[in-house]
Length: 121
View 1 (cartoon, one colour):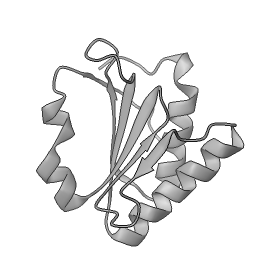
View 2 (cartoon, helix red, strand yellow):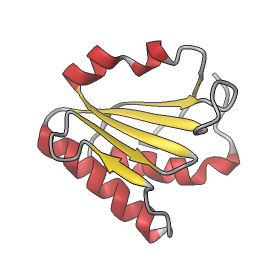
View 3 (cartoon, helix red, strand yellow):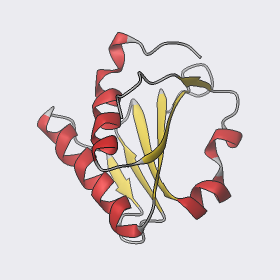
């Protein structure tokens, strides 16, 4: 897996925020050579609806402090799959069941997985 690049600071901010709320199985996919609608997917799992919303809220607050607001947020109420679109990257917060069902890593298997530094999340 390639090392994290220096220009990933906004994505890494979201990773740290998700990790601070105990997000599970954080995965970062580099989509730059696969699609043109975004550069990265940050995928994580939450153990319940409340945790999914807490992860989303923490990412929102932390990114807002950096001056970054999402272009859109979908799925917050149901919290089975919350999608936060930041343009250059998209955050996917899944329930365990939804992550297994949709399996974005398989769907986007042509994307490279970016190795996150130990202890980042």
